[in-house]
Structure formats: C-alpha cells, structure tokens
Image: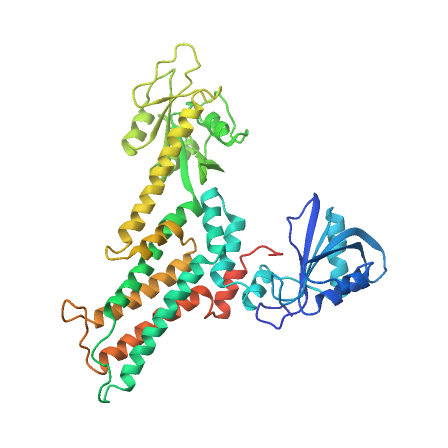
Length: 483
C-alpha cells in the first residue's frame, strides 16, 4: 500500500545528491527513533547512540543482515526538535560509487527505513513548524534557479522576509474581521462603535497585496527566462552563431542550403538571466515541402520571440528573407555576419559586424543582447509598477524592490485576496473626506466580514496555515527525492 505525505510519520531514507559516479554521496534519513533504527547498520553503535545533536561520527556502514562492510562513512547526527525536519535525523556521507549507494540504501531498507517520497523531508520540516509553505517552495526554487537573479530572489524568500510580510497582512485581516464581527454582535447596544470602520486601513492593505502580486511579471521573467531566436536567410551562419553562443557543437554546420530544417534550442545564462536560444531553419525562395514547413516554424518563432537576432550574410547582402524578418520585427538585433570573408561588405548603420566562425564581434553582440535583456526586465518591472496602485504606501513599493513572487500558486492566492478586499471596499463606501464610514448596522458589515474572511483564508493558504491535502501533494510532489 502506497504512503502519502499525511500518513503517520515513519523513518524514511533517500539519496540527497544526484545519482551517478561522484567523489561523495549523501544519504539522508529522518523519522521517529531513526538514530536507534540505523544503529545496527553502523560499526560504532555506542558512539552513534551517545552522539549529541549537530555532531559527526566516523565509522563503517554495514549490512544489518550479513554484517558485511559496505563503506567507511561519516554520520551527521541531528536530534529532535533541533533538526532540519524537527525529527531525529542523520546524514551519511559515503563514497559516490553507484554500487555503494545502492548497497547503502538496501541496508537502510533492511533496517526498516521506508523510501522517502519526493520532497518528504521538506514536507516534514513544514509539518513540524520549521518552515512555512512559502519557504518550502523557496527551497525548490533555489534548487531549480536557472540564473543569478532567480537564485537571489529565492534566497530572500527562504530567509523568511516574505513570509513575515504575509503573516502581518493576515493578522491585520483577522483583526479587521474580528472588529466587524464585534460591531455586528453589539450593534443594538447603546454606545457601540457601529458607525465607523477603518476604511483607509483596509484600502492600504489591499494596495500592499496588489503591489506584491504585481511582482509576478518580474519573477516569471527571472524564473522562466527569455526566448532568443536566431533567424535569417539560408547559409547566413545561424548554426555557427548558435554553436558560438552555447560554446559547443550542437548544430550541424554545412554550406549546403537547407541543412537546418527544424529548430533546435539550448539554455544559457547572460547577466544573471536565463536564456533559451533557438536556431531556426533558413528563409529562402522556392524551398522543398519539408523545408517549407521548417521555414513556417521559423517565422512563427521569430514573431513570438522575446528577442530576435536577425542574421544577414555580409558576402551576399540583404535577401528577401532578411527584409521579411525586419518588417515582422523592427526591434530585432541586426547582425552582419561573415565579415571575415574576402569581399564582405561593411556593416550598414545599426548592424553589428560579426564573424560567427572566428568569434569576431562576439563581445559587441553580448553587450547588445544584455541591453535587450535589461529592457525586458525594465518592461516587466514597469508592468509591476503600473499594476501597483498609485495610493500604495512605502511598504507596498518596497515589495517591488525586496520581494518578488515567482510561484503561480502564490500569485493566484494574492489575486484572490485582493479581489475579496476590492469587494469589501465596494461595500464600504466613505461618505465624506475623512474616510469615515456610516454603515448600516447589519447587512454591509455581514458582507464585509465574509470578504475579509476570504482574504484572510487566501493568505493562510499561501503560507500554509490553511492547507488541503491536494495543495500539499501538488507542492511537494514536484520536489526532488532526498529534499
């Protein structure tokens, strides 16, 4: 019978380093009494059992069934509750032979350890109050960070600053909800404060959350990167440029027209941002049927690219395909390739002289490409600033600089909280410039309380204070084993 994350915790184990041959491998184990359970697998049992938390013990890993020695290992001991998972926990450092790793995991299984589910160690840290859901997601985002910007932002979220901001917002929502409910309960009593409600405070928190949600456009760019498409006429040197940028021979280079009939891609990083570089089929007149399909894909990719590199052959000049691309994408970076050839025409104004074969002009291209990336980043930040309400305070504006939302789940829940607060604000219409509210004693505050509750619940789901099994499964099942 398969286990789930919400089953009663049992001792678990998994490889925490990538599989394959390496100098060292780390196997992680956690769970109730896992140190005692592991003791029969260790040559120096008394030393292990007596080891305090946050200490190291050296000894030999043995098979508990045959007492066969497997490897000399170093065991890091962590004792509950002062451990990463909040449970007793050990980490075994052994030699990184795949054979040793297989035998070590088999020994742990024989001792009674279950195979860990993906992300189960992080889930247990969440379940034991060591990490909230935002921090848990940040761990996975840090592991998967494709560039420097995404890494830095994930590390900030892991530090807890965003979580504290969200917890403060939820506490405020709950305090306002309590105030609304008190006024409903005592609306008929003399002297009850049923005629005023902190409309301005509610609006301020709505704007703070809207500003935070707006940073998704920046976070998405840093996490998913930008698509950079190389396009141009046949034999313009697109595949040579592709190989030059990715620093390996990925694309086939040939003087025969139509060598590249479909697109290929590779990832690389520039200026801290991830890029997806795409080499496309060349454009020319009267292509064959299969080649024509590749050219149609080239046009589609060129049109949808975040950045288009239009490559022209300096020895032939601009062809119909080049003119078509520039008409389609006037914002394209214009590259005048093959300037190393005898008889090559000088680069026209606005074009970058380049030799993809010799690497000449590469630095100029990279600088121009970095400028394009910064423009994309600035545009994404502009969207965020435009979505940030004009009345947002300094704390809301700080969200754009200090915290960036990169999870679609977080963005959706922030949007839900903002929508609920919009509904509450629409119900509570101020009657004068003091922003005081003259609410009817019952109906408006009833409706306001419902919207405040939904906003608070959305923030609770965001941090994991409120979480369904389906949400937890969706979040943690995407983690790697051993994390």
